[in-house]
Length: 91
Picture 1 (cartoon, one colour):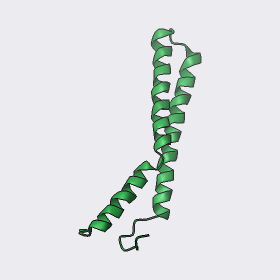
Picture 2: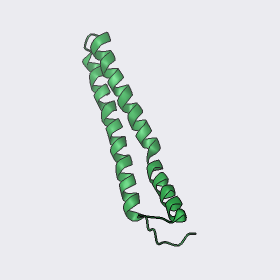
Picture 3: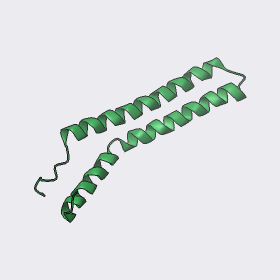
Picture 4: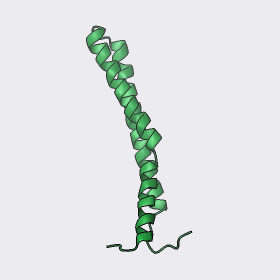
């Protein structure tokens, strides 16, 4: 258990930085998935099952998932390159 207040502050700042990595890409991925699903629903129920609009909707959802995976890999590689060291000197 960590009892030092300075170490807790550094650890919380580190975790906040890790959470912020890839946030724009995750948000864009979420929006792309939402737009893709809305396009597919629109094509299926409003435009009489239009196949010319179903496949672009699937492609947009796939793009959203690619953005999610990119943000995950980016975060993972950064954390592996910069692990939290509670014994590191403050700068």
